[in-house]
Image (tube, rainbow, N blue to C red; front, top):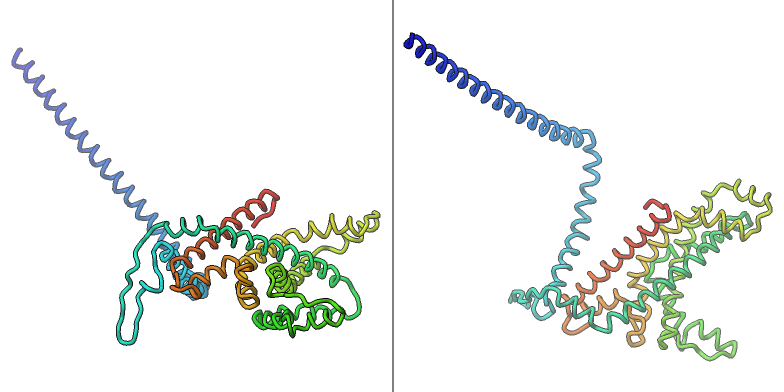
Length: 357
């Protein structure tokens, strides 16, 4: 009886061990199967992603082919100089320590990495604040006057009258003439001794005005020339915006007794908001970087009274002795940073007003 009982217990224990081993085997197979299933799913997803990309490229290959040259050109013309400029702004590169070739002898570069020292030097220099203040004044004055005149001329040309096409062509003409040609023409007009403007003033008994020789008159002169160059673009853009406003709005407002000023304030200005915001942004960026007008008309003078940020950067790289490439790059990076900050603030203000840009 005892032997039988012990055999039964041993048999039961053996069965439990076999069952446990079988259960572990099944568990391992289940885990292995689930792992393989997950790997297969990941592979399928990766394959779907790769196939989706290949399908997109295969379907829109012509778009990729059209975009690729543009991206390559922008990378070479804009991307590489930008990266190179940022790198030089972190060094002490000048005309004396950059790599150069003199005859058959090649001299290796010896400039060193200095970190943010150039930025500290420029920002702590009173010259930077002077240039920045005048650049902001110059930009605000040019953009505000250009926008006001462009809006006034666009409203005039939006009406039906005899010879409207001829007036449009005459007002667009400054935009068609190359900028440097226009600036040289204005430089001749502003000449103190032989300029046409002073000849006209002299004929009226008025003393000659030192247009380009007096700091105040020089600033007025460069603003006037830049406005003359910028009004055609502003006028054309705003004229297109005016022609997109439905005429029924003006007719309904006039029937309700709205005055001309009320129609302008409540119909014209809101209808031009999107166009106005765009042209103001573009005009601000262009004017902030308007190198030709300042350099060709006054060369930053008299003295340095009309020097703006971009002409100062040019002076550092090509006029100063020794030429300071690192300093010029630092000025350029600061100009880019200022414009990016302005664009971000401008975009944020437009979003608060409900405009999408």
